Image 1 (tube, rainbow, N blue to C red):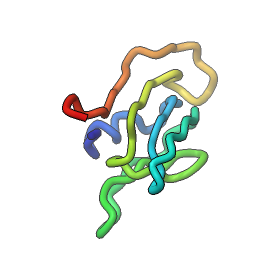
Image 2: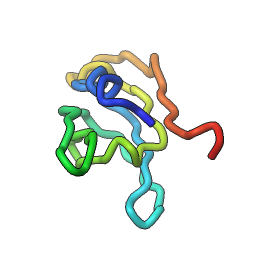
Image 3: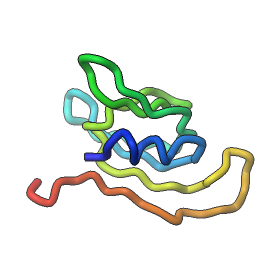
Image 4: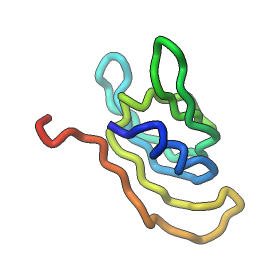
Amino acid sequence: MIGILEAKALVGKTCELEWKDRLGNVHRATSLIYDATFVPLYGGYLITAQEDIRLDRLISVRVVEAEPTGASLTASSSINTQNAAA
């Protein structure tokens, strides 16, 4: 699982995100990360241009662009949140 500090490092970057919804369906999107925050009673959230995603539901995050202005920095880091035992 990705932590709030790791998520805050993604703020301002465009990322490929993969997560599960509450029904277990897997979703994928490429989106700008606006913020990473903690919501009382719900936990950590990643605030994106498309929707808010709970950190405990993230499967993987891959940085595709470091700046939203169109800079051509490509993926330099990747976070896989799959548990090795799962």
